[in-house]
Length: 351
Image (cartoon, rainbow, N blue to C red; front, side, top):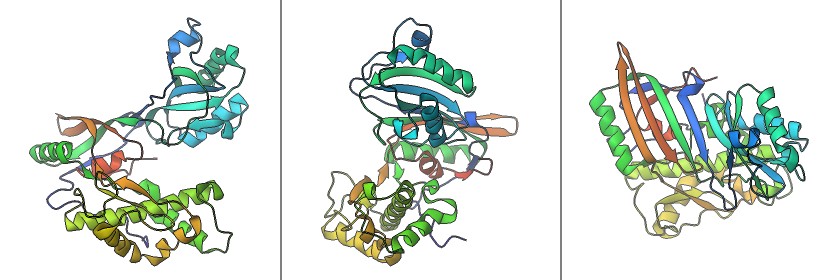
């Protein structure tokens, strides 16, 4: 049993109206990263590998849109760095993608002065890894940064669907129109919230005062990011309970309803909203204390998750029913959050 709350409320009259099995197989969960950077003019795999055109663009980094199945992002980055001889530090990517899925995402690989052998390098990737396929490539002047992709496109099948067809249809229509609370997904917090426990423990150890993200190691960054994400969920849960999660309050620092990504100094909100956020965080003093040592700057995150291009189809064959659903989310938004607002998710089959 976790010491941390890891389930949060849905707005009154909403929430799951059935259930479905998520990720029965990798092909049931497909993610395509949308990257649109100035100066990136990508060529297709066929054009480059057949020698019809050279890799377009300029710069010491080779951008690769890679389709992969069954491998997580960090491991793929490590392998790319090994094959390129630049190490994992020479590889960049915009975001972490699921392992038990078919994912199409961009990587940058540092290969200065090696443009003439780009095609050979790409062929090597595909020959050594049967579950990798190069989709598009370009040259670029710098390493890719976390979160700089424009969006993620999801194509998902939920099997063993339960719940009334009319109720599911209605809930999806409500989701399409109004969105849902933009909670961080459970994967952010580790097994039974272990990332949160680690954040509290790390912050309690005597150490020099850290200077933002650059002053902490990678693991600390993961733990402290989980801590501020959990506080965001707690504030959002309070707003959901109050019924004003999708409305502006006095003291809102943005042009849309947002919540705090807690940092040194707390919140950027003032007035009624600032007071509410400080009261909620004050209920968790050991978690709030984490940020007295991290020097992570306060930031904001939208309270409302509003999917774009949301489409769905409910199908059945004999006693089998399933939901095919597709949508586009901004970086940092969770597909499982959106799906959980409609169905209870059975993820027991996920490796």
